[in-house]
Structures are given as C-alpha cells and as structure tokens.
Amino acid sequence: MDQDRSLPPVVERMWGREPASRRGPRPRLDLAMITAAAIELADADGIAGVSMAGVAARVGVAATALYRYIDSKEDLLTAMADAVAPLPPDPAGQPWRGYLAAWTRAQRDIMLEHPWVLTISPLVPPMGPRRLLWLDRLMAALDGTGLDDGERVNVASTLTGYALTDAAVAFAAGDPAYEKAGISGADDFGAALADVLDPEAYPHLSAAVRGGVFSGAVGWVDDEDFLFGLNLLLDGVEQLIARRGGVG
Image (cartoon, rainbow, N blue to C red; front, side, top):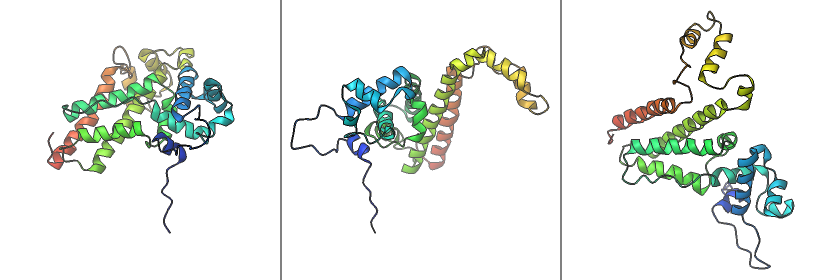
C-alpha cells in the first residue's frame, strides 16, 4: 500500500500551493498576513502572547476565520518559524569557510533579534521555503569540497544547533530572573558558582571558577567565545574536507 506523501496543509500554503477559489469574493486574508501579525505579537510579548484570538484581533477578523488558513497554533508556529527568517547571505564568490561563518552568525542573529524563536526552532523541522533556502545556500557553499550531500546537510544541522545554543546562552544572560538574583554578568555568574561548587565534588570546575574563568572580558557570552566555538566546528569541517580530498 502506498503511503500518503502529502504535506501538511499549512506547509502546502507556505509554498503557495493552496488551490485558488473560483467562486465568491476574494479572501481578505492570506497566510502571509496572518503569520506577519503573529510575529509582531511574538516580538512584543513573547510566544506566550500569541494566540489565535490575538492574531485574529490584530488582522481584524473573527478567530474562526483563521481556521481557513491555519488548523492550530502548532501550524501557526511552523509558519512563523519559516517566515521570520530573512533571505540567506549569497555564497557566490565566497570561500566556504568564510561563508559558513557568516551563515552561522546570521542564524544566531535571527534568534537574538526574535528570542521567541528559541522556544520553537528545535521543535519545527525546516519545511518552508525560507529555511530550506538557507540549507540550499550552505550546500552550495560546500560545492567542490568533496563532501557528499548527507555530510553537507549534517554540517548545516551542526552549525544551526551551535547558533541556537549560543543565542540561548546569550539570551539567558540577560534574563530578568538572573538580574533579580543579582547576577548581571560573567563576574556575578562566576561568584555565584563559587558559592555552590564543592571543591571535592567538582575539583576541576571549582578550581577554574576560583581562578577567574568567567571573570573580566572573557565572559561566556562575548563574541570572542562565539568565534572560539565556531572555529572549533569549522576546523572539524576543514579536516573532514581534507580527508575527502576536496578543496580546503
């Protein structure tokens, strides 16, 4: 028996594959308008501020009218995760390493600009036109390196995961919950750890914290730290390319 390979309706609409109605007045809404309104709400109030009723009010219709385009809030989040992404940088004429660095930084910047994306990105696979365009462009940048398609997709997944983790740490550093506890920077974070770490149970970490690993300019959310981790990953990609006999 053949499996049903049809895409979810919201994904079909994201790709512009919704059948056009031949009768009646032209609909006032489309998925792009609904998604844009939802993104505005999320940017203002976080993902908790996004509801079908709230989006409907923002576009000036009854909530029931949205269900012609969106079956659930989960579908709405799927559309939002794709629509919030700008066009990816163009890899033309760039060496692969420089492009991957710019690509990863841009991914992180999207999540820092729209922190609500952090709560849904791990849950939403890339199925929309924007997010898949990012994947396509990274694969294009790795043409001629000797990496096969699966390896190039895995490189993209690894760098996306790194961007997500780094953005989450940077965002958490500014979380009001930390500020209420008197933790507003790397120095405060280190001091808080020093209070709780038992040198016998955590000998190496405790010594590092007491030695100032989180102090001064070497904060764990500084750009220097982002580049350190990014270069570790890109060094690994470079080694993989060398083993495949491609162009480094």
